[in-house]
Image (tube, rainbow, N blue to C red; front, side):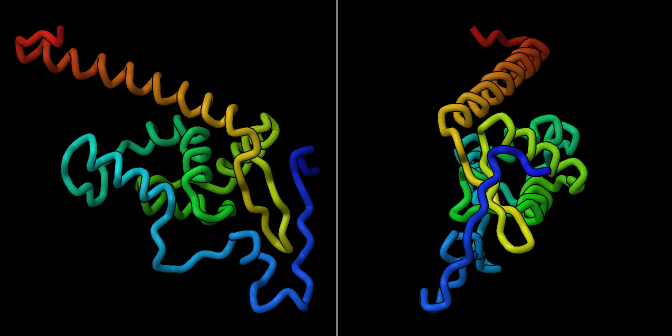
Length: 167
């Protein structure tokens, strides 16, 4: 059974021109295009570490513990309305994290049930978009604050071990 946030989207009429219904929705994607998540990760790594990131070494369990926030961030940063398989590929390619469909889809459905994401049904897939921008921003800010606080604690501990104070 679909969530109450699921919306049916009609296919484009035949006389709509050369674009398919999926293209009209923005759900198609060029193979060589960088994903929204990849762009955000690369930009953030360059700003934080002043280097070209290459492949980042992020612990998979840490990534999975922030899966909901990463999915919201990926959907928000996407130029298209991504489908589940694309989100799995983005997590794998960008953060070297393996997420099974059995983990991903319940998380997406929960975000949809919470009103953060919306599901749009196409012929054989669902694509996702941001439904409530304020709720999405709050979810991302809550996660960011938690991670920033933990990063500050860890950096303070490193400074302490080096005999320096952060104050």
